[in-house]
Length: 285
Image (cartoon, rainbow, N blue to C red):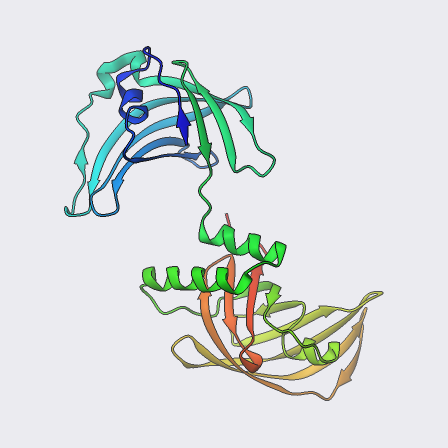
């Protein structure tokens, strides 16, 4: 958003802080097997970008130390990257540096940093559609708009048909506005958790109170592209090792709008839209 430009800045630094007409970004990924900091100059959506990367590490909790080691242009009209003509190995200390975080807003969206060349940077975190969706759900504001944006963006990038993934999934939002009895809501998947097994079994689990749980199991089978037929027909109230069976049956036409290893958006009973997040930790980093 803003940067000072001292005359002592390195040639690499001036590449980024001296451009007024392009969007400038910084990517920081430290909790990986290959921690890196990258500076990106985006010329335009039509042209492409220049990305300069550095191997990075954390020092004293808030200082990032780095060494630039590779760079390339990515032009949208070329099927390959063009190397940036900087001999990093020959630059010695000019390719090294550090970055201190001098201020971080409570929300984590605004950061002020100072570099080893004396440059001050003010950066605003770019909010991804997934973050906007979860923020909308947590504040209960414009959730449907955030869901529509998220699903639309991912439809444009999806290459394969999506599947109902196994695991334990907690419902965090539904578009249901009128509630019936809690037991009907539980039977229709409007409450609690869903446990999906890869053998075609599905379970709804709802914690009631004082150790009581509602449990309902059934089966699902694929009926079309991203669609499933679900039959839930084995319900009970559970108290410790004991269960009281209930005569209930629910049939649901389930359509997956989006799913990955962490979040699932679907449409089910009476066209209600659901958002579930995975809670069992399986396959999550």
